Image 1 (tube, rainbow, N blue to C red):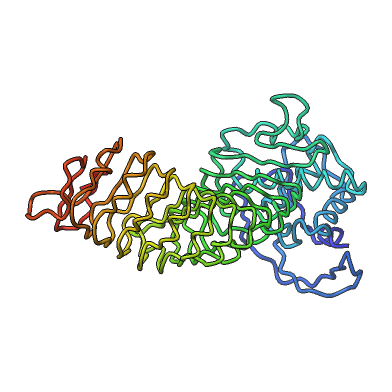
Image 2 (image 1 turned 90 degrees about the vertical axis):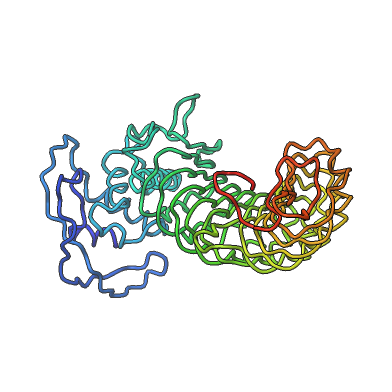
Length: 451
């Protein structure tokens, strides 16, 4: 068996990582026989193993038996939770979590009993996350160090951030802003098969997003915002309702696969390093309420191309945020079909057209940022119908004429246009604007000032 062979090769850890241990020396290549657990077919595979020098531990914990070690390891490998190579790396998070399950877990679950084996895998994955993501420095690590029942029977018990269903399976894992630090998010998290909500936002996790996230068939909410993830966006689980990957360093394009997530209600990919167009596939997300895909133009990242006319299909959309990009073309009339729209931000792009007169149909609009484009013509009278509007930014455009009196009659907290009188004639005559910007020089002023 795989586990027995690893034991024979000496792939065992001391009770704890010794101070100053050298984990970099590699032994010569070893030939080992691997028996496939599912097909029972034997194949010979060359494996490069890392030699672990036996270390005398000061721990008072009695050494575990090779029999229990082998049976637990067999379970973790045969269930495709982890791979043999992961355990062959000294002091890897997988090896340390394995040691904890075998040697220290107070529940001492039997891997040969199906129900206990499933629970053992769950506890292994939770401890693996703890070891891989700097658990010793977490702001709240209750439960992970004592090994108590992760399910918790009373308020305040169980493991921090862990919520289980009536059958004891983890459904929610909420570790937002908990000082998580690590070089990668372990793919083993996909073995939490009943996970519905995962929140690891506002931490310091690095590496690429695991492709095995797509295996979380029950996942509905995924918050990984404000970390240090890199690489491209992998396929996502089919039942997702919320996906927030904002404020990372993700590159590439927005994958068209996201358009297959029929339940998706919130998509936030903003403040990354994407260079992308708006996929047509997103226009089929008829349950979408919030779409935020603005990038860091200052870092050479942006959304480009045109706004699809099919955007009118997103009838439930309340927030559309695609500012600071390279969008070109027109503001399509179809956007005025989004009658639930509350926040519209298309500022600082390259849009060049008139503003649709039907924009007044957006009766729920509260903020409208169209500044920093090349909109031309006059400001439509229909904007005066936006009774809920509070902020309207129209500066740094090529608009002309006068601000409609109907717009001046609105109870606006902020209204901007190119009405500065440094040069005459003004582009826009506006007696009610709170911010009059330079009518010739199109330049965004720092420090949060409009103009």
